[in-house]
Length: 185
Length: 168
Image (cartoon, rainbow over all chains, first blue to last red):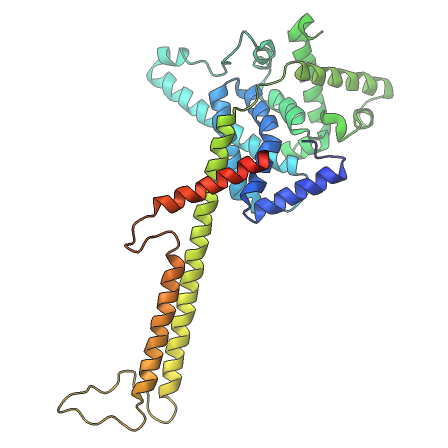
């Protein structure tokens, strides 16, 4: 769903959000329909795992249900993807703690559970290359692509100067193209 | 897709020279192209249906909590009004006696200000308010106070039907 630059889309989105704030179940269904694909893509590209992405998407929409009354206008995408980013970072912290626990108790077991393994690695070449980027840069690229956030919104979200954000995304996408080699043609 | 919100050349032009900004914008656009060439998988229909059901349940629970809260608030307000009315009624010409005279063979006769009909009327009003509140809060409970799964299931079915209707 394109929600920018088009007055009708903006108005429709505002109606849906108002409906959600009034507890309208159909409005929630519309919101899920409009944003689930992009949010799922964001989670999938960062985790490379369908099961984890399913779980994170469920958590995202339940968090949205709890917090929708606190949305006071502005860019809904920025608001939504800020929640998505928080959920992803919570997941990363949890995964890091689990890995530390496993390492301290059974190094062998930990070695058998690699952190960012795709379900269909062979089929998805891009997923493997994204896994080679540092997590911060990969998240910025995915926030920009799936969240359709501007560089200004991204730098606000991350609390860093716009030049830093631009530089990270530029370098990250450059590295990704390099890693993909001739496959992107 | 993302550059709908901004002009990359303008944003980059603030930080780089015109030529470098154009080159960097092209690099970013070709990176976006790469991401579009390899689309991520989409969420399954079962997952989306499950999320819709979770939200429908949470909405029902929230509505139930609101009804209970309103019921309690009304009960508290009614109790305050009734107690206030009783106190005002008895403090008109005589000293306040919340407890009425105890009838019995050796009991003294009721004082002049005691009015049995008024007390009966007030008692009936209190009972009426109580019954109304009980019927309001009993929307999801049967008379023997057990959970009504059928009502819950029907609610969820209605929600699912609404969703299906909306999706065509």
